[in-house]
Image (tube, rainbow, N blue to C red; front, side, top):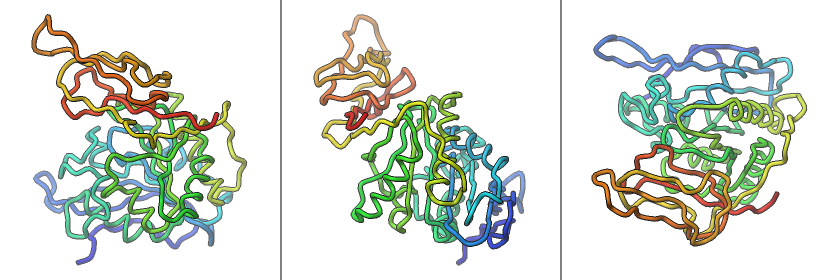
Length: 332
């Protein structure tokens, strides 16, 4: 069975095209309807290819902002090769402002390689795996913390068995020029877009550029600059690299106990801020009972030295929720 998604643009044609990935979706309000996932495609002859995506999770906005800007400003005469610009990868989730799709409740970043006969999210993942990734050498997937997390703005690559591929990913991550960069230790890499692209030999860069379910002028500018620099690095865009005001700082989070998880339900009082330096034993947070007064809070302390790279965003926390991640500074 073939994937039913079709593109309304021609991937072999030179120039700039704006169109859709058309995904058949029969539903109560449209029996023969489709989901129209917006994309732009720029091509200028032979050369390297790149896929640029935002809103892999629908409540993360720096990627959509930067890629909508690019779709409106890219000069085809200054590129060599081709670029897929997909600001809202999980389009149903983006429209609903949710992390996962409201249609099938699937997390786009946990179901790769997808399925040609599955639900909407699985179909999109399968189309990327079969149709888009094989056409490109470079992949940039722009994330932020969404509604439940907040991060120091960083770009990331992963530890890979192929050290030449890993070095290429690290070089592209450095050139993105976020305030911080690192080799990211994932909690669970199974089914991730990252893992699929890397398994296919691509130069893959991911980011976390903020959080809280919104964006700022600062984080939007980091994303916009990073997209430009990524295309320059790939040899696709004929332009100078945009240098940040301050050099990127390399972090490391490979140490044990980098992640701190809650073992209680309740009201979270953060005792450290993003970017704060901590030592093992320092107080990170208190969790108060949300059911009664007069109950002493539970204290959480750092198990390693470093800086606070990420934090839980809402003030109510549940058992199993991520609360903090600690990274060490490798290079300033």
